[in-house]
Image 1 (cartoon, each protein chain N blue to C red):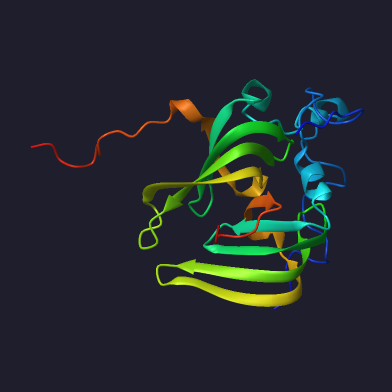
Image 2 (cartoon, each protein chain N blue to C red):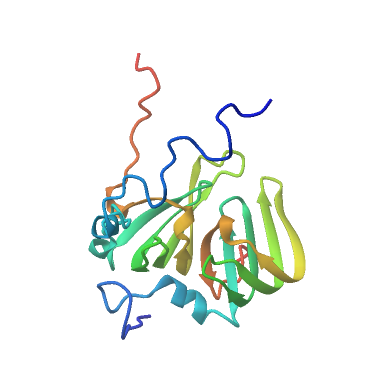
Length: 95
Length: 124
């Protein structure tokens, strides 16, 4: 998947800009892994320059040696401070 | 008791402007640069370690000055649920991912990392 950039941005014209990738994901499912052992899957409604995210129909997985604790939430604002990894289109830790 | 220095003004305070400023042209140079040039690693496999202990590797497909990374064909290295500093050797393929700059602790070429014998165990 390559996106070519007409203007702005650094030297290499055919790389994928990280925040553009997040932007393309708006409206789709995204799987987010936090710095700790928490993961979320939800539909991305939007985000801000700090990558705080608004998500819908969220499933939260808390991973521990005892297994995964699952919670469901309708709509959340996720604080971007603790996000480590994001997987656009991801379905969660169960596949 | 009342301040013997008198009034509200700080003694010896500077009237205004940045103390020690060298002028506008010089202060532009202080603009932060990353100490790693990621353009050299584009389309190459890199290993990434995160604050909190997560590790992954993948092909670098993009980055920005804040060190957000786009990795393709990402492999996640799974950790022992009982000891999160230990890798189990298990991996998961997670495809195209975005690594958040603020969480990235280490970036290195994927082929320059190798396990060594524990140097802290006394050899007797």
